[in-house]
Amino acid sequence: MEGDPERFDAVLLNIAQQSGSIDGILDIFFGFLQRKTDFFTGAQSEEAAQEMVLKYYKKHWKAGVKKRSEIGEKNRIADEERRVKAEEKKHKDEEEYRKRQEELANKPKVEEVTDEEAAAIKAKKEKKEEAKDGEDEGEKSDEDSKESPPDGNGGTTDKYTWTQTLSALEVFVPVRPGVKAKQLVVEFGTDTLKVGIKGEPLMIDGKLHAKIKPDDCMWTLVDNKNIQINFEKFDNMKWWTCVIQGDAGINTKKIVPENSKLSDLDGETRMTVEKMMYDQRQKALGKPTSDQEKHHDLLEKFKASHPEMDFSKAKVNYGGRGGGGGGAGGFNFG
Image (tube, rainbow, N blue to C red; front, side, top):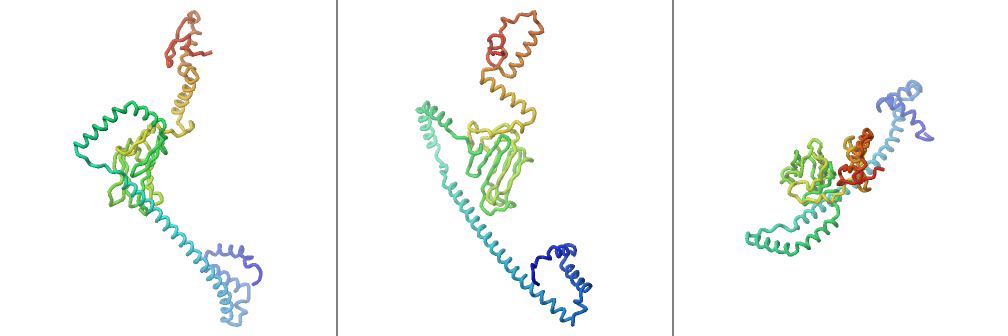
């Protein structure tokens, strides 16, 4: 058949969609030949009709087999590439995990000493501290001022890393590559946390720094090598110094609070924050706060209601700035 082989595809696709199956398409096609052509009535014999059908069937069967072979080879190559990448990733993850375990193993360990040795070490340390007390205080102050804020407002221990906001906390616990989620143990209570692999000693088992909301917490296994745990703090107005009590802590004074939008706050909290921001600006400019302005307005209304009274020599202290000045606690209400 000459011409574009796809020129009848729109019609044939419509037939295929309405017939619903290959059997349906063939039945419709041969029914059409029987009703509208002499394919059956004009054929020399049944064998001649079958031979004609098989001729074109074999032609398209060969093309189909070739296409199937090409698709199979393409899929085989894609599968092999995925397998190689998966193996490379597995080896990389295993190497990272091995190096981390080596680093932890090479960290200085606590050495046991006798009571006499401990007393001698303590006395020596106290003597040095007394000699350098003034100098150390100055150096400590300088170091504190130069200390950079903790990454993510959190920290790192030998078992996990963590970050936090005022209201939430994220903990990342590395596990050996290839571990499945169903093999893990992750349990958290109001103020406790347990993390580990089934059949092995727990990696984390302790009391949290503060209470959490267990029903609002969740965990997931990321890339089969890190457990990510998300906590919602019970008190969402305090920074945590650590995750598990007794673990290494951070200096919360160095934390840089995250930026937040007033529109994200509820009505009452938003009003409180806006008032605090306004009062802070007023104080910086040497002007009265919102409370002092309110007191001033009340006094002005009282004066207007009692014109017979003389307030020219009155000294009024509205509070908050220590007192006294002329008429308005030292402020110029203009």
